[in-house]
Amino acid sequence: MKKTICILAVLLILAPYSAFAGGKKSYIVGFYNLENLFDTVHDEGKNDYQYLPDGSNEWTEVKYQKKLKNMARVIRAMKDENKVWHAVLGVSEIENRHVLEDLVAEPAIADANFQIVHYDGPDRRGVDVALLYRPECFKVIESKSIPFDFNSEKIEFTLTQEEQDYFRTRDILMVRGMLGDEMFAFFVAHLPSRIGGKGSDLRSRGGEIMYEQSRLLEAEFPGIKIVAMGDMNDNPTDDSMAVYMRGKETIDEVGPEDFFSPFLSMFKAGYGSLAYRGEWNIYDILVCNYNLAKAPEGGLRIRPIVKKKFYGRVFNQPFMVQQDGPDAGTPFRTFSGGTFKGGYSDHYPTYILVSNK
Image: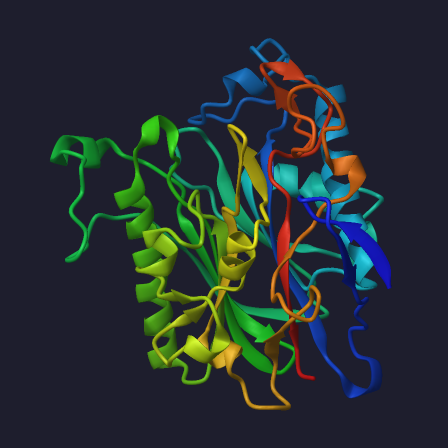
């Protein structure tokens, strides 16, 4: 047992996990916003100019290598605590496949043998989502990049038709395969930004798209287990997650058409994965469908991992926390106020435990 620090500085006890001890199969499934993991070379069509050596961030090879090592250190720290690598790790704010190839080759995590599922997307800022997975645990059958659209019968959009035609955001990634001997699908999203106080309708549509796609998979593959994850730019209580993803706070509430939202109760209890203007939020969310939340005994099912009460984990260690200055106590960022700080990310990673016992 190891002591870890939650973002409210409350000591929690977290049991280590053995992947296959005594017939038990356990898998860590998580998400991490890598906060602008860009290389130093311009990609045609991407707005990466500030992340070039002559850009506003003076993004040099030295800074890039520091960023890679920092991201790998966090992933390694999660493995050291859990005693097992993530089976599946969704990531966001990555520029291209190349940065992920560099990341998974970092000495600190190379032993994990992470493989990559990534598609170049249309986001105007030039960032994508992707999935890292261990082929020893997860066998990919198919994947696709799902574009954002405005084809909703329930949501009234604030953007004009012209604005909708111009709008571009991250695609949603879907990867279907076998986790152990059970069929799973993973959605990875980075829903539209809150900048300017706008976009709640857009984020609601993002949740609706994932929900619609999930129901199609459930119809085609009865019994399939689904995890939707990402930087939702919303808390679990917001409409995108609570209404359009039908996220429920407790497993008992989850019906066949619902999702279990493990970070909803954690958010209400004061946990957070990022801080903005003095307030903590959990935008880094994982939700799971009925088949995973209420799987019969012997099947893979989401399990409590914090205090034997909470089904989600917000991971942070002292080295990931800003120790001084006006941002003390918040995630230690790569940049702050336009200045290179050499930190990690403005988000803490989150994960769940999936086990058959």
